[in-house]
Length: 480
Image (cartoon, rainbow, N blue to C red; front, side, top):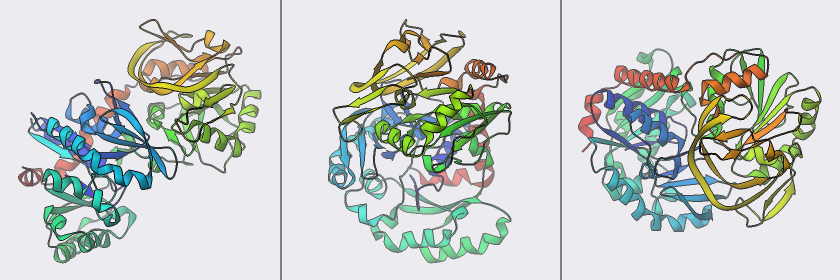
């Protein structure tokens, strides 16, 4: 089990890299994360949803993603509450304080998923969540040492030198955790080092002296990691353009942004300049298209969008002949009204939408979780993606669907002038044909680059990076 001194230290990336590295050595490997908190999720072939990071790790192992790889997924819908997904299915929602009491009831399901996953492979790589030193949450923990103790798995602790204070991160963890937990830790890693590694040799030695744990490696910063999906919206390059192409694509970043890896394939195009617009800034006037991405808190995010003045910016953008595309929650915002009378995403209520599409949305019914494929209704460009939503949208503009599914269903809506469109499908731009069709509409040209091949190359590069800088044979001796 790989645990971290905090969130964002690179656990997901290193587990993914190790999954691919050991798979390349001929081992059968599986990833596992007992509890994840993320609004960037993936649909599994067995009909559930798990964190996007575990789906990426499954890809690294060369196997389909499974609900057992991430049995508990928390999808935040406020600063104090989250939707709870257990073994791929929504079971309810809870405030943070109430969830602490619920966790012991979830542990049997977590251990059952772990046992199922351990049935056949040579190696299971477990990823912790957040910080191993959150002793205020230790009593009912199922994500870090609570799981490690219950499953009796050896632990490697990893710190992040890039954020500073890595010696204190690791030594402080040893200082505050229970001695029985500390016994499970078999060594430590330091991640994201930049510069001359010899300058930190004494630092590694001092950590060993203070903790009694052996050093298992110093991992240099890996730039290739930028090609893999981010698990947490905190890692998004907000306010910093990605690419320098002639076509600016603007994406307003709202608090409940979800499934934001939908945007990653666009960065592969040399004609694209992708700008993630932070709150407090205006939507760039030079944008050819504004994309409203998915949201876990559609009504709250719509209120935030309007409060930022982006509704005014969006209408000015349309007067200039610009395009608008909404994905899932962003699609719902483009309509005339959104109703959440059952309080699925927060307090019950309804509010007017942006009114750019003649549709209405009701948030009700079971969540749709399914892979889909088909063609763009306007260009016949193919797509492969997935549905992950509760809302049902209807209205006159749905008579002009954006997508035709291969099973005969239709999805999405297009305005009468063709400038505004939206749909429920995630992963739309993983297909090079869809990207090329979009860019052609905006006056550019697609590259034809395969997003799937880019992900595979990135995983291979991270695996090679870890082969170079870690003793993978030594790490295997620590696993049972």
